[in-house]
Length: 558
Image (cartoon, rainbow, N blue to C red; front, side, top):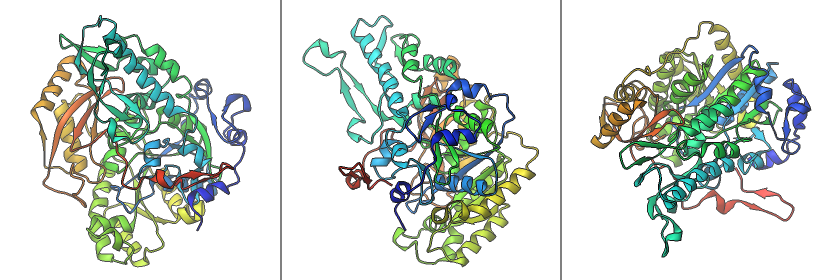
C-alpha cells in the first residue's frame, strides 16, 4: 500500500471554490489561499447563524497507545461513508501542531484513504494560524517585559509573572530559561521564564472558545499575566495589549476550508492539546459546519477521559451545543496493549487479551452513557485482526450497551465505513430527546468539580490536592473565579495520573500538584502528575526522515 503522503500526492483534488459551492457559498464568500484552501470570513458565517443547526457527531477514543487508534482517520472515513449514503455531511477538525509533526506522533490529517488534503500544507504552515497565535502570545510577553523595563508603572512583581512565551515546536531546552540576562541594563529585567508549545498556550485555547472578534478581544483582555506587589492580578487589559493581539489574530479566527480525499468539505481550525488544554477545534468552525451541513463530524483529542470530557463540560457548555451521537474509536491491538501485551507481540492473535484489555474501553463507554449520549464503538481494523477478536469486541460492546461497527477506512476510505455510518445514523434518528448532562455544575466548589471528574470520569477513589494547589484554589475562589469550569491536565495514556497504569485502574488517588488561572479561556487549569507544557523530541524524531527534493516533492511526512 502507498504511504500517506504518496496517497495524498496522487489525489485528484476539487478546486476549493467548487467545494464551497456545494455548501452554498459563492466565490465572493470565501478568501482563497491558493487553489485548494480557503478561509470563510466571520460575516459569512454570521449571515447563516439563524439556519437550523444540523446534527453533531463527536468522535473520541479509548486511551491512546503506541499501537495507534486512528481517531482522526476514523472521523474522516466516517464522513466519507456518510457522503456515500447521500448525506449532506461536513468535517470540523483540529489543525496539526508542528511539534508532533517533527517529533514522534507525526501529522494529524488522517491516514491512508481517509485524509484531509492538501496534506502537506495542513501538516506544515497551512494558512498561518498557529504562527499568528504564537506571535500574539509573544507580543504580550514582549509588552510585559518592556513594561518592567520602562519603569513598571503597574508595580508588577517580576517573581510572580504568570504569562509564558510559546513556540510551535518541541524544544525541551526552552522549558526553563532566563530572560533579560546580559551585561547591561538594555537587555531588560532579569527573571526566570518558561516556554510552552503553542498548542498548550492560552491564546490557542482562547481562539478556539471565542465566538467572534469582540469575544476574542474581551477574552484576551482578561488574561491574567502577573501579580503585582500587593498580590493583585494584573491583566492583559492593564497592559493595553488586547487590541494589537486581536489584530494579529484577525485572519486566524476565520475557519479554514479544505476537503477530504473523497471531497467531503472540512473545516480544519484550531489545535489545542487535550492532555494540557481543552483539546477541541474552534467553536466558530463547529457551529459554522452545523449551519452549512445536515451532519457535522468532529473530534476531541486523546481518550474520552480528556478530550470528550472537556468537549462536553467546557466547549459544549460555552457554545450551547450537544452531540447527537458519540463514536469511540478502539482497536484490537490497543485492547491487547492494555492487557499488558508487549508492542512487538500485538499482531499475534490473542482473544483473551482483547477481553482483558476491554476494561479500558468499558470505562469510556460507561462515561459516555453517563453523559446521556448514545455511543458506537468503531473498531478501526488492522490486517492482523482476526474475526474471533472482532467478534469478542462485538459481544463485549453489546454487554455494555454500546453499538459496535468494525471499519476499514484506512485501506478503503468511505466504503470501509458504511457499517459505522449506518450505526451512527440509527443513533441520530433514535436520539430525539437529547439534553446536556454535565459532570459538574459551575456552582460546585472547585474542589468538588475536581473530585467529580476524578471519581466519575477517571474512576479514582479519592483526590489529594497538595497544600500549595489548595491555597491557589482558595485564592482564585476569593478573587471571583470559583464558578469557572475546570480543565484537568493529565497523562493521556491512562485513566489515572500514572501513565503506566493501563487497563482500568481502581482504588487510586488523583494527585493535584498545581492550579493556575486561564481567565481569558475561562477556566481553571488543574495540573496532575508530571505533565509538561513543552514536549521534547524523541531519540529518533520524525524530522530526521523528512526531506524535499529540487522539484518540491516532500518525503517522510506522515
